[in-house]
Amino acid sequence: MARLVTGEAEARVHFEAEPTVFRWILYRAGTDVWIRVLELADGSEHDNAGTEIWSSQQSIGAVVRAVVRCFDEVARKYGESGYRGKWGEHFPRFELEALRDAWHKSRPLERCLSTPRRSLRG
Image (tube, rainbow, N blue to C red):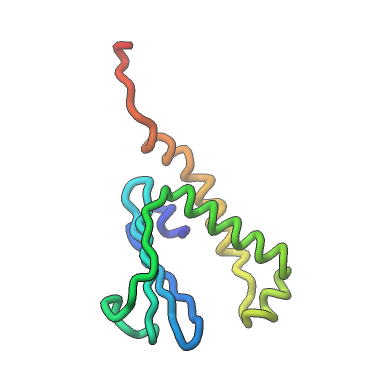
């Protein structure tokens, strides 16, 4: 998400749910994000081998807020050490704070891009 917030046009995320893999493909266009979620038997497979199980177009703000809220809730529920015990990885604190920071810095720009322009002639 931080990559999209800072201007990249595409980002991909893989979630291992053995034996299945869920691939999220996110495309940014202006202040919107098009999201596709694919289910694949193997993470090395091409997108075309997957089954699209969900897609949506959302504002970048709505998606970032959802991601931040989810990770904040996981940290609250399990704690950072509990996260490691449950998922075998360190809680992505650095990445979460980088996303939060990038989002706060980009918000004035997003408001400018999404605000309709008015004529100065009144």
